[in-house]
Length: 436
Image (cartoon, rainbow, N blue to C red):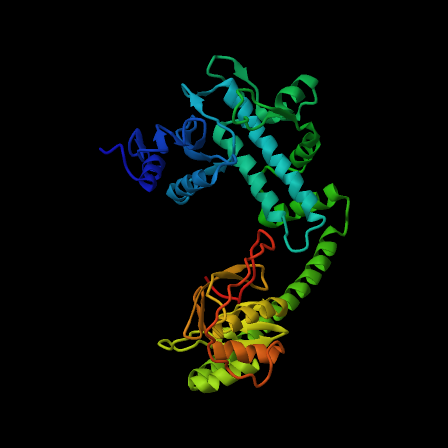
């Protein structure tokens, strides 16, 4: 028999009670009927038996972390199909085949929890546009009936200490102040770093509970009759004789809205698909063009950067064009006109051999700085960009910052040193728009 297994097997062994304990070696384990996540402070579920030996699973509804959520999923999945399951934060069990006083009160609080849920569902029905909460309330009522039957709460019984425990329904129905305090002031979830259980007065739901008892909704009757009485409960509690007619009107309006939204979603999907097909067709058309043809289309702005690249193996890898008053590279970097003027003056000095090369920065339109690495053989290298002088000159002419028809001046014998850089700001100087 193995006691250290993987997490799903821990849940399986617990659900079938195949052995007395097992763990996954870290944070998920069970001992006897209780299975825990990250320690005994968080009980995921327990396998309980009543005085007749019948079995039920009590699965917690306490809040938990994302990691414990995985353990809870394994627990729920491991429970065999068709077994009786109660989802509750309450812990109820027999000791020596009898309920302790603590479990007795906890079993009563489970009923209070269900009545509170019923109240919430009835209130929600008044504004609901799509959801009919009748089945939810019916499930709560059935849970109360199953719970009472499983623990024998409809009759007097002795506690584990020998004291007589009165029928829970009678105590919950009592209007005595002492009984209201004990049975309608319920315990809440214990705070993580506190040993005290918070208590909350929920006596406001007693009147609804008495109404449910008076209508006999905890008793099994024919389906048609039960549905009628349950529907009338909603009408009377909301004080709206036309509750279901109003709900039908809201639902009809919401269904119409949902249909329109669905039509719009389908229309948007069709438009996206049509646009994608057009782009695919255009992409294939451009892919079959020569580089010169694509280059002219790129210069004119008919194709975007993502559909145009300079072929590998050339001495340059980027082209320039004027777009919206800025210089734009084929790699997607933009430089504003003012920065382009400064850079063009610098490039002209390098080209005419009137100044020694020095490193500089390009400040692009997005406030990013890129390094100018070298200028050799009339090719400017900045980051991953290699740009020919002719390309820069043509772009400068289109931008109107270079004289039209200016010939390349031959190198002069005399070089002059550039003035020292004057820092403009801490963010750096500007450059051509270039990827690093």
